[in-house]
Length: 87
Image 1 (cartoon, rainbow, N blue to C red):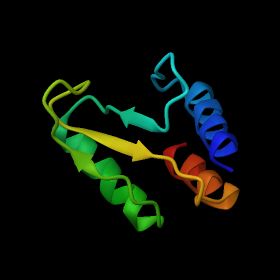
Image 2: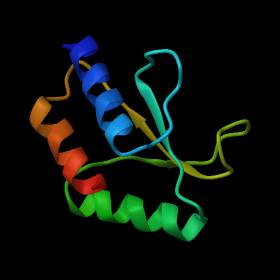
Image 3: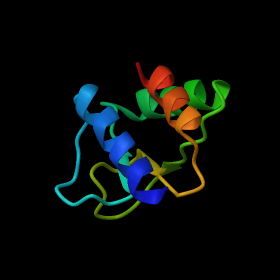
Image 4: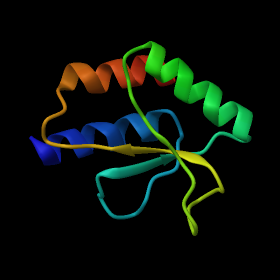
């Protein structure tokens, strides 16, 4: 379900010490230290079957970052694949 998936990704981000918003929103920013690191991580995730787009958004946490959106259609297996790819 949607709430289960958001909670699972929030738990994952907590374990990996990635920044979390205070609200339990389905949007997560992954902010590597540089543009090169951001694009390299996006490529590594894609190679492992996880699509997390690179975005440039005014007012975002950085000029360029990865924006993960969790939905009710994601499976726990996909979230586990994300965890493995980020570890």
